[in-house]
Amino acid sequence: MTALTRIAGGLAALLVLAACSSRAPEEPSLTVGTTTGQVHGLATASAREFLGVRYALAPTGERRWSAPQPVPAQDGVADATHPGARCSQGTQTAGTSEDCLFLNVTTPRDQRPGERLPVMVWWHGGGYTSGSGADYDAQRLASRGRVVVVTVNYRLGVFGYLGLPGLAGSGNFGFADQLAATQWAKDNAAAFGGDPGNLTVFGESAGGMSACALLTSPRAAGLVERVAISSGSCFLNWPAGGLFPGTPAQTPYTSLATDQADGVAAAKQLGCTGADALPCLRKLPVDKLLPLNAAFSDHLAYGTDLLPENPPDAVRAGRIARVPVLSGGNHDEARSFMGGAAMADPSAITEATYTNLARTAYGDPVAMEVLQEYPIQRYPTAVEAWSTVVTDSAWSCPTLAGNQALARSTKVFPYEFAEAHAPNVSQVTVPGMAQGAAHATDTPYLFDLGGKNLLGDAAQARLGERMIDLWSGFARTGTPPGAVAGTATSATVLSLTAAGSTPVDTGSDHHCGFWLRKP
Image 1 (tube, one colour):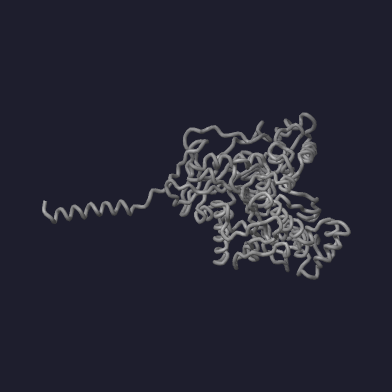
Image 2 (cartoon, one colour):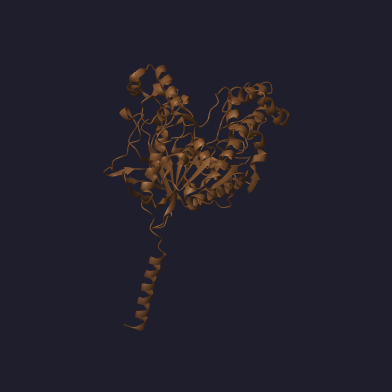
């Protein structure tokens, strides 16, 4: 062999080695084995998605109003390229089904072999009566945050929160679904490249209220390492007319006795009474039950096995899971609700009705003090004035009080979403009133809603990146980047806007000295 031949052979070998070393690493498989069988998902430019994965048997027939039942391992490979049905909701059955206990798993596409990522389980909002996990496209959150995201369906309205005397699980079926889906995520985290020992439940609105309840549930022991609550403090407390004009006073939770009494009344409307009420209701078609859905908003029941205490009482007493909590709300929460009410009935919130709204909500003489604290002349419209009163009294100051109470028992990182130019997710438009950081306007910064990125410009996109970094950083370590640690007396929160993230005194901003004063 000549020297030239040896050199040529050596170069060829080097070229082979170089080609092997420069080859792109093998991508994670789209077929994954789970405790319920194999599933085959899809790849996008940035993520792997496994959609419509069943985590419990269909809650139909005799399983209607029973605890979620585990799915036996299935043979073959289940298609996981399309979301499962939305849970029955509203007044229409199109696109919804009682057979709805599905979840969706999203991971970064470039996940490295052996990498174990934090797992974030999303409980959606919707007043306990609407929504689905698939509404929240988690590709941006998973890929930028380098987390595994699981978005969950759970039973809603009458199907999720009905109670009847003697019915096991009364008022807790939706909550039980959330817990079952979270357990499935923990059991299967490693299969998707997640860390089963680092799981965060996070939720907004009804999902946040449920996440706050989780902190007080015996079932939380060992299930989660962190909880993030958005617009869902255990302490939320709406006065009469505080959700919408004409609605009764309410909180996110109800006693088992009240839930069961409401269930008896609802059953009677449908001709189901006495000992035969449950079998009678189970025989009815979905469309006969859907008109009752609204009656079971904010009907997550306490005094039960899953939720022994009213969550705010448990928080005050320190009977909670000792896990880090990220907790906050939006600067202008009530503008979504009052703006919607004003669009439906322009006569509901006006200068002429402002005093009566305050009297209905707070009674005399407090109403007169409220009118002095919030003179209508200070605001461009009566709708904005009343929205500010309700935001401060029912949302922001109770959230502050709740965070202070949590801080006595565990680590809390309070925040407030205050971006004035957030996407108008609720399509609320009231002449003279800016939408501001209304309820649910924070969600497009973590998710693409309905598969669409709603962040319209570079400044909004940068805020979305900062919020993803905040939530995923919290999930990773328990301490969000740039965090403000809460205390039992502090009113300082991390304010999130497109201009930056800065500490602010939320108590002063929302008149909490007025609302949280001792009687």
